[in-house]
Amino acid sequence: MHVAVTNRGDDIVLVSVHGPIDLSTAPQLRDAMHTLFDAGRNRIVIDLAGVDFCDSVGLGTFAYGHNHCVANGGFLRLAAPSRFLAGLLHTVGIAGPVPVHDTVGSALNADPTTV
Image (cartoon, rainbow, N blue to C red; front, side):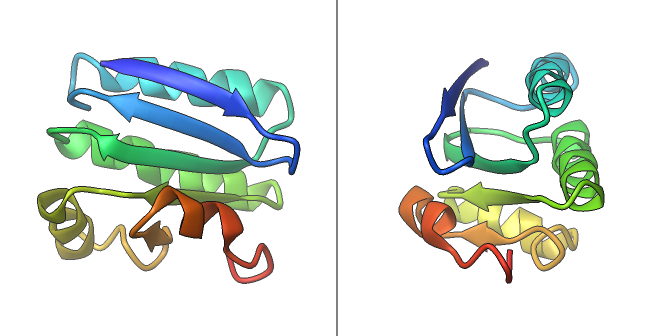
């Protein structure tokens, strides 16, 4: 898995993930989020367009990040999941509490007051 972090001028951080998010790779995503949290960044969009697999550990990482961001006045949004991943996010109940957007652009441009 590869994780790339882009700090944008609008105080939203874009985290792009490529590859599977599973037991062996999810810690890398969690470490990237911790680095952002330690820097006071709590408005995060995760670009899932490059994710080809996600297990329960990966899903738990999204929930963990969302809870941390919201507790600190921010948000975590998921963007551009594959059709399969979008269905999985809905089936397990992550979509809803964690906003899921069809595109990165819609996630970045969503009203911050409605997360």
